[in-house]
Length: 159
Image 1 (cartoon, rainbow, N blue to C red):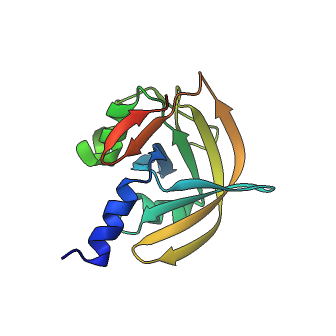
Image 2: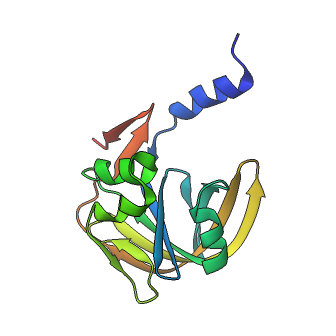
């Protein structure tokens, strides 16, 4: 017999989502994780919601730094998604892909679909996660629109 938690996880596998890498920096150290729980919140002010497990090493860094970057991955970034999803040690993640920093030191993937630089406006704790409200202060766009999508436990592309 399935529990509600098992059924919930099965239902979430049916919710395909764009793959992102959330990045931050503190005292010269770079932090980053793969995340699909990212969504637009408002066009005025321009803002996003980013949900991060409180057990993640980046969670207290975002809270302290009060800024982060959402790097929207392209279809060819599967290796980056896997690395930042835990396949690579944290110290090696930024060796995969072409990374730079903005004027504030936030890591940005140069060929991401988009880089959204956000200031932390608010944080709400819920269950195992923190929901970060990010006010977008800068955006960089590149390339054709070909986002990396994740659904049912695998990567796919928009047709």
